[in-house]
Length: 191
Image 1 (tube, rainbow, N blue to C red):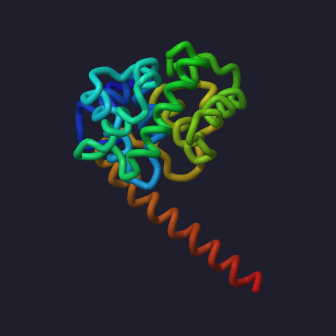
Image 2 (spheres, rainbow, N blue to C red):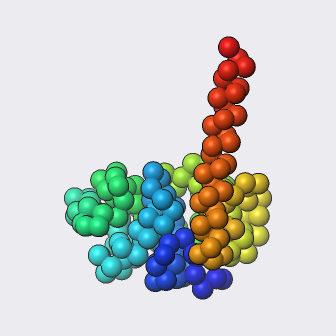
């Protein structure tokens, strides 16, 4: 197990992501329309504001209170209302289906297909987050059933230092630009 996942510029947040599986899942849930460092700093902010990072606690919070916590300056996410609901839904699934133990999402997976299904069933997790989390589990935590989920393009699992995060962000932008150009060219060819 790594001591830290270098997804933010905060040593404390990076260590929390490596130490607490729920933090990792929440970070991925927040990784939407914000930078990677912003998304993955969210679990640490949430923990500081509510006192603990516990699925049962978060799932049972009054939704308006959780939204207030997300909106507190600096906001945890640029869409605090919808992300507060998403995180609360995620925590409810962890409580209901995994007895509050977020790590069971991958430790109890029997195969790559089972892991893919488990991750994909989490609120807000689509194909990109399945491969993103899968790459982190495989490459940073050595989870065997996650090996097949590692994509053949720049992924979070390859980040092992602050420098690798900067390189990942640059590679991700280049990859997205190339895909947009391919889609544009394909659209032009169809006309």
